[in-house]
Amino acid sequence: MSDWLVYDDIVDLVRSRHHDGYSGLLTGVTERQHSFQVGFDNGNIVLLSYRIRKGLAALQLISQIERAKISEYPVAAPVELSGDVPDTSTILSSLTSNTRDDTTSITEISDVPSPQSMSNSGQSSTVDAKMKAIIEAAAIHHFGPIGAMVCAEHLHESRADVRQLMLEIVNEIGASEADSRAFFESISNA
Image (cartoon, rainbow, N blue to C red; front, side, top):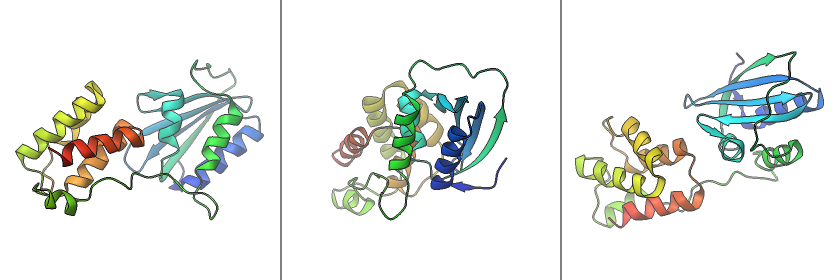
């Protein structure tokens, strides 16, 4: 397994494996302990996965990685093509467009309410039992059963920062920016 690689280095590794005609898997673990895979067949990307997400949903999550450790597993037999994977050039363009150099930037959830604005609306910034119930109900409403599963993982811990907890939930779910914003707004308005 490699040392920690930042996102730009991960993209460079994927591009170089494409150009080298690599066949095999790049398997990574993010600093949040989420696993992902990029599968190659003669340089073509044929598999994308991030936790339970595949294809385009996985690509969106992979594009948000900040740091990861990568292992390479070359194979002689072709990696099986996943049906929902876009073509390699689209994947590389998407990954490259999210590099964090001077000309591009990562889209982040920046318009979500802060704990200060939540406190101003009468809600506590600490996560008490009532706040946990509100967060869980909103997650189930906006994200369905996966929201319930992620809440079961995150809500059992004692927390002092509502916003951080909510960010962890939307990041683990892999929610779109619009869905994340709706989730935050529903909690702010509760």
